[in-house]
Length: 484
Image (cartoon, rainbow, N blue to C red):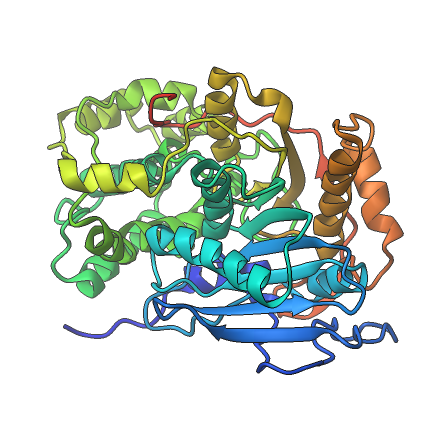
């Protein structure tokens, strides 16, 4: 099988902010001046930090950082998806700016690599708990333990508090796959099904025999479709079934609500750089973990799904402009051969992981409004299952008005940490502190060192905080396990 270079979406979708600000793992040492933000304007490294690194019983590595004046609060970091065959170090913070602030304010940090790459939820959950055991043995028992993480790590964060109640005091899932594994893979299947049915019938969506050739065929079809009005209308339909936002590049200006041409151009980037590679190139890894295909579209009514989608107006407008029958395209989707899930694989993905809505501890989520990888509707799916079991008093959601996956500034993340710590200190949420105005003021007060984000060239530029009041649309195809 021919090798295929890492897709573009790896650089963008699997934690662009994390990658751009990533902290390299340091070897174990008694004290090391790490987690110092580069170009920190004279802000000195955190001196005297104790670094502990080692290997867990299953081969996963761990990293622990303890500041000299530890405040007895531990943040356990769950890292994003790691592509098989790429480096997988243990990480205990998403970026060095945030890590520096946390250590300088007395918080200890810990995290593991997980014993597997790819869809490593099954391995991540016990490895993170084992890391807590190492911390207790080598450092001591924290008074408060807070789970936090990005992307797949945000999903693992929510999984930790669900599967290990009593081990955590609070959680901060950031850009997390909070719709759950079954829902997110079904949604990606829907977008792929539209591309297969309307653009490239030979496409394999499950049990892919030649991932490189299959992905190349899809990419060629999507690129060709973008050259015609009819093709663009059909790409918008595929994007709408996954609720892909019409805004892609961080630090760019969001297209106007009625600028459907610009929205589709952004969705084309999202499809070609994120959704199509994730749907086709990562699925073999998922199926290897699950022991088969856990996704299905049997019984799905795509006309009804489109009617609920945030992109429905755009799809209708672009089909009219292209003189293309939307009812004809929906009829083709209705008539297309459907895909069934394999029961054992579905059982696996339900276990690793879907959410039952039971929190038990305060949870503060963060999401960007223009995330092409984990759409903001994912947070709506999470809130719906939390509401079902009556735990909404423990949950608060925050949204940052920016395109991109995990595209938070360090200042925005730190502001969320401060509000979550206030919740733990007072025993109740501070409604005023959770307003976008208050969150933005907190972030701005941290100064220029922490209010940065990489531009398209990778250069860190000043980026004002952008918390916003936002209500996501319903998740396209929610799935959750019954409440216990």
